[in-house]
Image 1 (tube, rainbow, N blue to C red):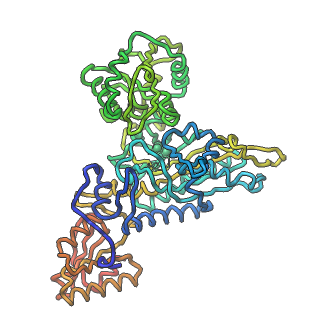
Image 2: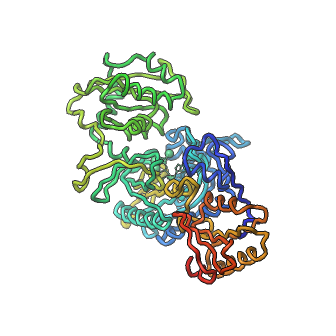
Length: 564
Ligand code: ATP
Ligand code: MG
Ligand code: MG
Ligand code: MG
């Protein structure tokens, strides 16, 4: 491919809302173009990278024995009513009506669609197991689409769904998917960690997440320094016994005089809830000097409720860093109440009717404060609520735990019979008895991975693509394309590298100066540049390593061997 023939609109402009390196560089280097909130187009370089990642995912899924299918991007709402998720998915599920006034949704995930596909087609245990996957567009009407491809509303996901006649067989496939995912991330050249996770809105029992390690990651994960143990902080903080008890309390609506007034909290919440959450927490830490905050929210919408209930967070403010506290509060929902005397739990029960852009109108009707003196709850010790802390040695081999940041790049779930039972999807077992399919589901954020590669691999000049993800491996930079001999040498090396199977782009732009071409190379982040310039007369070109920016003079005849 030649630069002169490719649409690569690089720019020096950084959009105001682009805070993460991947967001800035992918826009500036001409990989993506934003058309709406959380909606991006892929320009030629972006499309190449997306397809490369997609190809690795497809190859490893095919190797695992899964079958590729494609579900409609649009599914009738009736399927979601059957599973019960029409009411539990909340506002992330984008619904619309067609001209006949029938209800549809843009698929955010496809458990319903796959059950519909398999139901009545697989009827015997003899036809199990089966794993069906697709790599296709998803739409989630995220409350806060941000960070470019990292949290889009429209995005590309690989989603797979497996069907089994027993839980043992599901566990076998779950483990196979874990190994398959590890191969994918390893091939993409990423440093990652597999962690225990909560199942969130998807449901089911066991689940594991795959995190690309990067300081910009939205998730905090707890990892052990001596073994493979890792857990998302949401899963690590969860203590099942305490959780059950707290849910009971919330329903009982116990009131005590220890709470802040509704007016006080409302004044925080009348603003954008995201920032007000920060304000509430900061106020607690710095002004009130609180030592303990507990966040628990129910009833914002069903999705948030699930998340909140799964992520009851209790933190000792003195020990936790500000980011983690804010994160815990945000994860729990839209508000936490602070200024807590020790051993007092405060619950905010918020029923937001309108959480568009998280601007909410709080009033006495939709916020109820509940304070609970924990000592009054039989058998519940405050220690039950305390999260895993850095430096703890609990959880696994006795090694020390530490916090790190991760980008959730994949998530696998043991669903069990949640969807098959709800949708009445059965097979006949070896005794001729009807049983609900035992299911698993497995997601990889393909478009999020484009951004994750750059979060993990960049410098102040731009992107540094890994070998498997680079749009081209080598950029041949002709310093001055008006010079016949330089242009010709560029063509020759280009043809030779292409013949050797190297993915190569020739910067043959007549009117671009050397500095500009070099700037584009650094911004776009091809792994190597071959610079044809002054030393050509002596038979040398310069090889530039994008990662180290190291330059080496190489004899023209050695260049292919050097790159291969
Ligand atoms: P998150 O916690 O980041 O919102 P999730 O847990 O809701 O993600 P899953 O339902 O587990 O996401 O979906 C499987 C994968 O799809 C995720 O692991 C992630 O890589 C990707 N993904 C989810 N939401 C988005 C999004 N809004 N934009 C891009 N990728 C996403
Ligand atoms: Mg999500
Ligand atoms: Mg998640
Ligand atoms: Mg997830």
